[in-house]
Length: 250
Image (cartoon, rainbow, N blue to C red; front, side, top):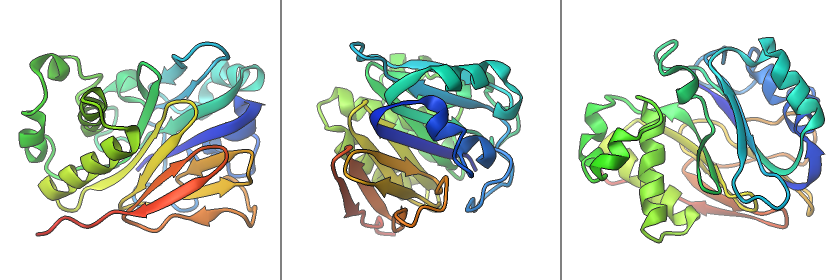
């Protein structure tokens, strides 16, 4: 379910990443090539991007399919950025959450997306949710597993964890609480991309001046590399680091 992508590098139109490539995110909304769960991502979409001199990203999100949104087509053509995160959604429950449930979620300088599902949600995440402040629970962006996962990541960031550790530890906590969860997370602060491969496909493209991290390659460039399952990726435009994540004990 869902496809997502993040980019850091030289300034480009949003469409150069999300629309123009032969198998870009927009096409993946109706014709993904490597999606393991679901076939069409038409339950919402979104993109977040960073403007020069402003650490807080802008966002554009809608509840319907991306291919029918003319405003997005114009936005992708004219808006440029050095960093972005985009996602198309295949909801676990059709229509659940509407626009508010469409990634990317945002807080401060951070943009976040979740590709996957948590079995038994919300009961399976009850103990983890119980560790959140009541204000955090009341302010969830949507009634979805993705929104709760974002709140769990954000709590760790607010407590002082760097974004890589916050993402990795959240995935391990959820995997222990809900075995079988699919937890491909994607987070950026505009200069660093952090992602996990946990139950679905994840790839990256890196050439020394830009890094693209995506659920699947957007073209047939031979420099795309697949991220092994149970792996944390941390990348800037200059480098990519992969770290294995240990499966929680039964």
